Image (cartoon, rainbow, N blue to C red):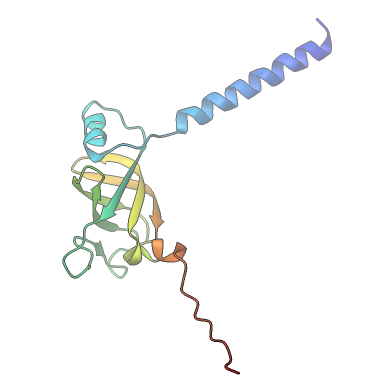
Length: 141
């Protein structure tokens, strides 16, 4: 075999190894019911869950617990998934900035006992993306 063929085979093998390692880290979007079923089966792979924060009639978040003086790396809240299932979520990091203003939340993690333990939290704040009205006044002649 020529040296160029051996190098080509090695490059292909490395590319396949990289693709296989990144594919195993990819997680899927599931509701809480499927995350619970996976945990009962012993599957501890990370999953994404999309949901909204549970709020009362006045728009205040219900079930949020964060005391930075007591423990700055413990944050928990209640998330309602797309199937309207409520689940306690625990995040072992500080509360994300603008969490209170977010409308939709995407969490990555897995079920551990009675709570969903999140590794990452992605906030979707529609107020950031809506166009603001621009008032233009023209001078009168």
